Image: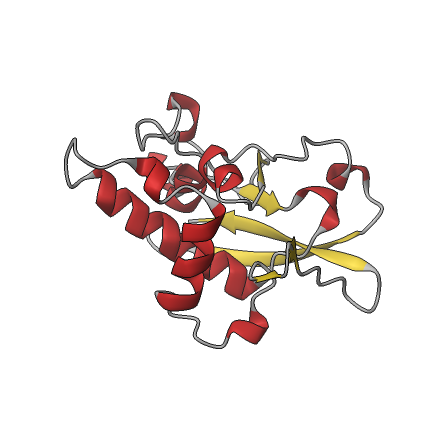
Length: 170
């Protein structure tokens, strides 16, 4: 649909979804940026009738291939709702989600600028961190768990031991 919707779902930190996935996630571009994310299609809670009900540009962007800027065919249409989370149960906050979306939107604009664009200038940890600090609309970096502290990403385990997982659908 036209309005992006996000819902937080809490899972226990020891849930198997955080350990039975690749430590590199399945989002190819963000793995290169040092931010492994898992994007998992799920059944819709409500019935979806129109093709546009299954549109999910955020999930499509998360699945783009670094070499082309295009997602595989199964992520381009009829995607539907997805869960987005970090392997190992690391935190992925609302602000992190927004910054990641900003980064991918800017990256896709660069792919559109022509054949001279080298995606590897963007798809690395240093550039991603610089983008987050310099170009992000989320200027209050203390709310971002994806900003590196030394050599490690900050982890934001909630006091109740649950981890945030994003249910993302358009």
